[in-house]
Length: 512
Image (cartoon, rainbow, N blue to C red; front, side, top):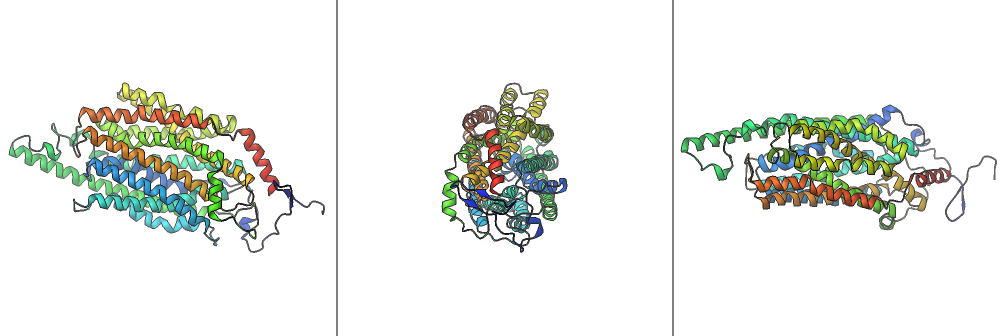
């Protein structure tokens, strides 16, 4: 063996010479473990922000929009939310499959997916917030555009998530890029809630509610002049609300386009360094089976599946809760902003915490924080308590966003070490993680909206029956706590400790 020649050992004990350098690769692919510049990390993080901007708007406002502005009944709204989320979940592994079959291009293997689908995402998002002139087919309209939007956003989000693995092989650099990404994504969530909340808030304030409800079922209570007055008021309210929601959709669509351009110009995707391109790849179905049998991946996915369902329940029902359960309809947009500002500010705190004490401890400390405070808001529903709860809940929201995406690359590294010849299946990890969490969120959203139907939710009414308020309190308090406790119990079984993570890092450095 020549002096200084680098060799590595496979699990079978064979010696492997490093692959010959490829002179056809672009220069940026030859040194993968170089330090990432702050500019590259920022551009990468900015690329993920628009997905959260749009996701925040739909999470907080789509349910109340379908019920009170589009005025489809709660059962139809539950079907839109459930089928749309489930459709998005199914599209994740399908998109992941096609990504594994994608060829390397001049701009990378993942980047063409993100750039190509962005204009179509913007169009489908806008029409999701457009009220068509007909009434009988509105359910089909919103179901179709929500499914289309979910498909297209998947074509953006799956390759973007997998891109983390192709920024650097250094775990510390990837964790740093993930922290940048999560900070900007939480900021994107804040921007989305701010844009949507501040623009459409006037459509949901108490001044738009007269002394009596203005739903169709209540218009008959009063004199003819009063009925006409209520109908005119109701039509003016709906016209104003439709206009505000379309303006918000247009602004968010513009943000999506700008952020994608910044990411394209500032991020360089690099190829996989661990094995030679000349080696034969394992067929997709065999790679899929290997991924689904990888214990750390299953444990992590199951744990955060329950945790994400809890956060989703709070997100999707919070505006309805403030509007109909605790009489905070004039303050909900500011409470939402307080939650998200707290989350943005606390991301660096959790990044420091996970580096100092480990990711698993950070998950337990961060996510348990939300439980007592959501219960407190249910039992002590006043404005001061609401803001205290908002600040405290922001800490847990930040942890729930940062930790899974920081831990997934460690799981991929553990898989690579166990299967050194299985190349190009990073997208399976990310797409199926999103699949499971989306599908579970779709079920929870559909069931929660269906619960409102059973409780007697009156579409378009300013005031709801007491049963609706009670149901919303359960959906904000008891249900999320049960899901979080279940998720944390599963997370106890997660095997990748800090010692295991460092050992894997050293082994992978030997394989390079």
